[in-house]
Amino acid sequence: MTDDGTTTAGAAGTLGYEQARDELIEVVRRLEAGGTTLEESLALWERGEELAKVCRHWLEGARARLDAALAGPADPQENGGGTTADSG
Image (tube, rainbow, N blue to C red; front, side, top):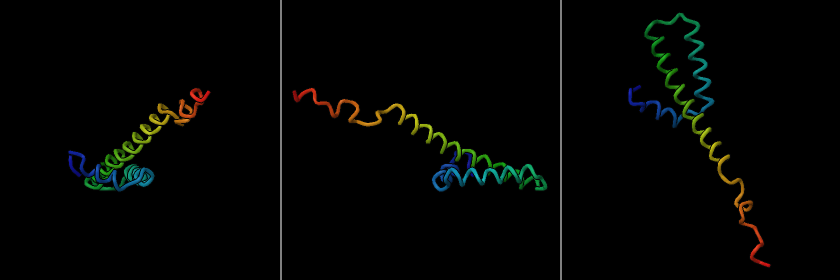
């Protein structure tokens, strides 16, 4: 993992939201259970941060798509595309 986010960007392209979320849940469970060395705990924490970024990326993308769908026209025909004012 690098500080410039290249690992996260790569992971975002390969992990779906549900995969990242499920793995993040497992990482948190392992950290909360304890019994790991300091090095293992740090590695788990770093992986958790990466997975959280992947989840956040997916959620932000979903939010942007919803916002765009709500802001845009639902059907071009409803916005004057199917009027007959010129025919009569």
